[in-house]
Length: 434
Image 1: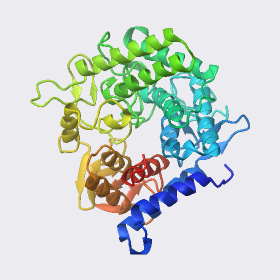
Image 2: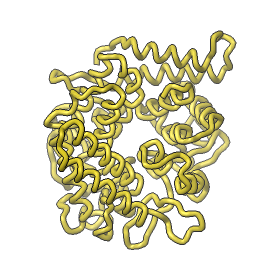
Image 3: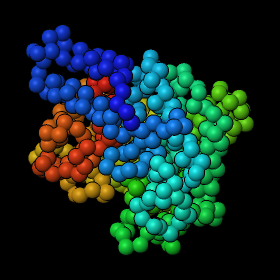
Image 4: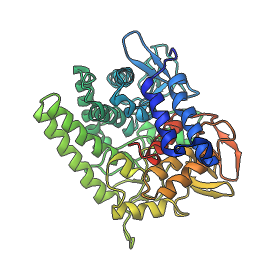
């Protein structure tokens, strides 16, 4: 989009500088100076490279080096702007425009994860699934439907704005409830299928596109794919169910106080409670002295002990609002996933952190480092994560997707807008701006 100057964001940058560099910036430490400089790079990068205003007032958001809009990424990329939006009508208009576009995407196809700017037929691959010229990719991921609700809710709470709660928004919310209800009985009731040919097994679903077999009637919601866009091993993705439980409660509040629809509010709240109860029943790894959550489960007794850098993750439970940082089972889970029990926790000569099967072994993700800091009660750990992030940019001054724990000159994506935004959130948190 045309480059604009946002006074509130300039003020935010100056506030970060004051809080972290002190009254005499020249005398601040080198790392503090770099933390601030990278913050300025990252928050400006999102504004100048990823957003495009459309004639209808909506805003199309690319994730980085792919010309498509992911529902999840677009919401996460805008998260740091909720604070300046409190006082800046321009930023409010920007966020409202992104929400408008997200809602139109859900109404096109609630099972798709990524969309084109126009109905031009561009796509990642011609897959065996329902096709639509608006769709870049049709991987069903629970979190894709959660993030637009969460962004809408937080935008309302931070600014008091309600203009984004249109009749289309409510229609999309009802579609989300329908999809989630259907996918609680995926095996019996869902018509969703997805197959991709000539690809890694993580890019397609088994059983003729039906995906991982799960036990029905658990109360959990089935997901074909993870937030990484990789296929689930077991169909009940616990972090995404956690986020679903949170946003269903938020949807209930919106239904009651914005739309005055008490039946919808009651339905969403009941659904939220049902999913939460199911997580506690089926998402806890059994036979452990200190109980912790699995990453995936199937309802039959199989569990996957791991975590992935992509959000929502088990690491991000307090961040998404599922529990407090001090919650005992969260702390137990955190110990497991930040250790060798998590096969995707990597340690090397230049740092350590959670990676993903989506990228190379021994590559940790900047998103995971940021989330480790955001969910920590320790200011020292927050600073440690920030320092590890700025020391592994390879001089680009921007966040990457993943970085080789033994050689930061090796990384994926020279800049990754989602990671830039998580870094900005951590810097703001560390600076006491919340």
